[in-house]
Image (cartoon, rainbow, N blue to C red):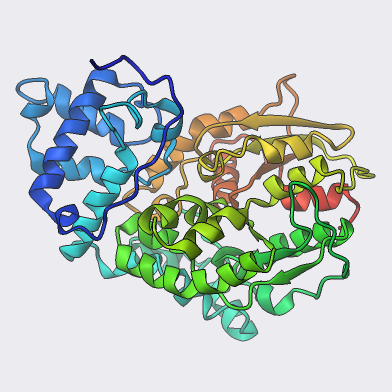
Length: 449
């Protein structure tokens, strides 16, 4: 007998993406109909993203006012609005496994996206936008970077990008770095490895495309924090994109190619007793959840999963080991901080907030809601305004501290989400507090900047 709701924590089933049935469109549409019917009868997720209002409008405007009245060709409108933040699965849905209805909305959307990709219905521009390693080839070449960054700020270039590449002319875009993080990173000062009960005493840094090519300063601040706490580190010998942008497109073969390049390298560090840190939540999540679900029987994948850490997850575990310095000479004042979706999905708790709250004379206003950026979703012409609409409650909630005062800083563990929030502040006239990544704020509080 079915029970209303789920009294147990949600669990994830492996993604059976090698099975030919996974790409059977008729079977996928049948599963979408089953899931949409449950969602229509529940509607708890209506405020999360565009997928659910789109679905419910389709149902309400159909001849039967039920899912059976919706043309299956319209299901793709729902699929296209999903950017796989995973919040419906993790925070809202009462019918996820182990409930017998076995409802996994994000991975069913992923299946549909994979079918769409296999059919050749994802354009060249979208595929290029998701090819972060390709964009990053130009980083670190000073003249090329300076020209590219300058050109990308012109209305002419942005209009052309919107027309050719589908990148909204008003969306914030990251600049290329003059020097890549992997080229600029200094060697660690600390040499002694001091293991704790909960933490390895040495760290391997998986740079991530964004920090390597766009904002190396965030990575530099992480290294300063590790040095300050006498934690020896090394950069992963070589790396490729984690695969998250390709996953969001449904390009699972490219995700596998990234896995084949990254996992053997990362597994070596795991076997050598390193904690592996990735400072972009989406990248950490790929190795903690998505790749392990795609390759559940690969021992090296599971090994890397067990050794992958969010930086603040690691630092706070280090504190519990009594091995983290907790003297902060620099106060920060008011900080409005947003926990990104892919941080929440890691099930690590509010570790960033926990560390920020240790800083004297610092008040934290924590917001647990999606910023709406969602990787490439928020920069596309088709979705930018939707992304700004989804993020608006976040922008407004972050604009005032709980006592009504204004924030000195706005911050998010997701660098792209942070810039999206900053743009939301500007567009909505909410003020101009300084945007800083949490790692940069902690480095500042330690007096390292």
